[in-house]
Length: 422
Image (cartoon, rainbow, N blue to C red):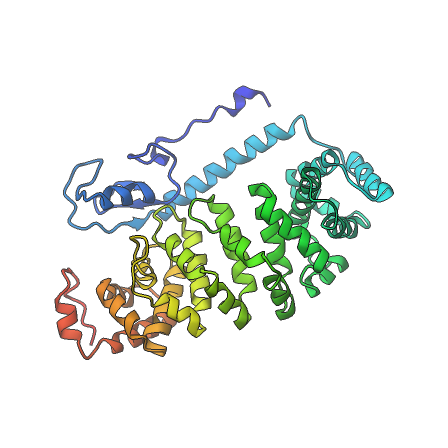
């Protein structure tokens, strides 16, 4: 493949009319024009009430996800990524014989060089066939696990960290192929084992973004039993490092890896309480309010908030009405995400509101829902094609506000007068 083959032409309708960048989360206004969610949200937040492309006055500032275009962009982006990957691997590909020789060298010398491991990483990254080949290499997984455990005990110099990063990335690439491997099963039962967990934590703390993603995903994959979840979550430093990955300033892939791992380990009650004490609710609220957050990120944030809402400490933090650093309280941010991300995100959001407002009858949460125009959204949700479970929870929520329904509903400037809630 020549370098000229990598010249990429971006279809014009993939670009946001405002930023001119390829859209990450395309949404359409009532005028029919599609924009990137972050760009149009900033336009509207600045007080504008017109469509930027047509300059028409907007009768409604609501927008809906353009899922068809989003899927087309994803397919195009993946094709571009594969072309780049093929180009990069043209001069770096290793044959299977060469990789076997590298593995044998690791076994003979009980140590690894960064360059040798990097070659195996590139080989694993190239194709599923290569990953299956590595997974079937006799003793290779055991060798990786042993290297992971031993490397964590060595001096924490830059070379040792780089070796650890490569080992973790290889395990991450192979994780889908080695679920039933004896060594991995032992890792799952032991929550990564003390030595291996120390190495994974070290990569989380000092590794590159790509390596930290791999480390979080390996932790997630071994957090399968109640015992392993506790061992991972209660390892000093693990939860704070995972929460650091969820900062809105981070790359979306890094954020999602951290959130997925937190969801996996936060089943035990004391882990949920620990997360709340570490300020997880505040961090998650920021992600909810961030217009750049992807749909997948929003789904995971709401799933994690749903998890911590099952303990009283979590509900107390979620219901805090004070505004911090100029942002909305958590309940308001949850209400704003209703019907704006995906059906899965909406279900998680409704479950949280149902828990704090209906099941535990938190007064501050009920007031926050009312203030955020939540009743109108719940009414719209009940008229949508939602699941029976979501419809029932929505009906339960409306019962909470039934006593003051006339005064509450009448104060909203809404065009949903045809909806009769009671």
